[in-house]
Amino acid sequence: MKRVFAALAAALLCASGSSAVVVPVPEPDQSVIEGSVLPPKLSAFRLFWPDSSQPLESLTPYTLRTALFSDYTEKHRMFWIPKGRKASVAADGGIAFPVGSIIVKSFGWPDVNGGRPVETRLLIHRAEGWVALPYIWDADGKDATLALGGRRVAVSFKSPDGETHDIRYAVPNKNQCKECHSLSGEIVPIGPKARNFVLPAGATDYWRGITFDKPAALKPVMPQWDDPKSGSVADRARAYLDVNCAHCHNPAGSASNSGLFLRWTDDPTTVNYGIGKRPTAAGRGSGGMDFAIAPGDPDHSYMIYRLESTDAGIAMPEVGRSTVHREGAALLRQWIAEMPKASH
Image 1: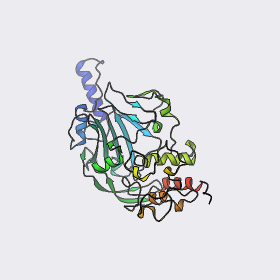
Image 2: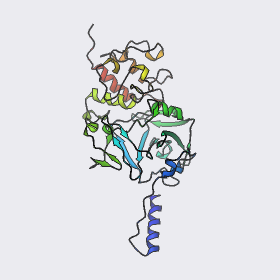
Image 3: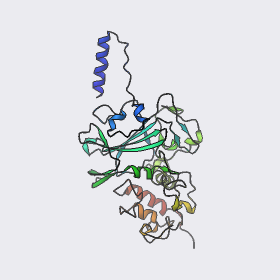
Image 4: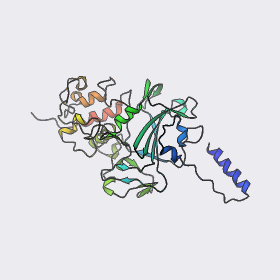
């Protein structure tokens, strides 16, 4: 598709008889982004080149130090902020995107559909608030279709350890999107946090609409959960919990009634972080164990029990995965095992 764009540019140059013609880079359709409709096709937003899953160059790609686990999918993350508008960064590292912004995340596997994405999720900041929309890519990979009710997609892929997984991958429905992205009852972005961003080389102050003008929001940076050089076992475990659990497990999240708060900024020595914390309700979720985190004893910590389960009613997170993230669970096991056991 880029070759088509180059050919078009060359044709325009020839037609004009001048080498000074500049062909503008296409931009997303701001009228659709800020409008009130829920387009049945992803192409309506003009985020990707026609008939492909190749995003426009006007979108800003970004990566995270520690990312949410979603059945070993590879994710391609991008955002777009309308020209003339800027995002701001709060002291806690949260990023406030202006109205008209859109956050785009595509999910797929290298060995599925030739590496093309299976789904693309949008977070759209409209005047009335954020809107979350899931789109499933059509079989030919030329466009994606809105799936407000979600869907199960049969896929077979290999995890990094070489094991083959045959699952029915869960594309969330619109309500499930809201469940994870809820803060005080409102939909908000949960992935882009200043401390967790991997900034492009040289982009220390300004990055396509985001002004990083609050040093406190950037330091200390969150470590990469699977890189021992980036932080201690405890810090990497806490980063993992922040990204995979804290969007619900915080005082304003959908799991606030659990009393278990797992944000990077929460005190990890308290009961509210899980140390010696008893279940708030009876049920299968605790597996008959007494504490979310039993220091020195991961086998009797129901946090581990839930992370290592795929059973509905036990598994945590409740949505977003059909497989166990063995490597992530192993890190948390090591973290708990290295905690000094409580004296009696």
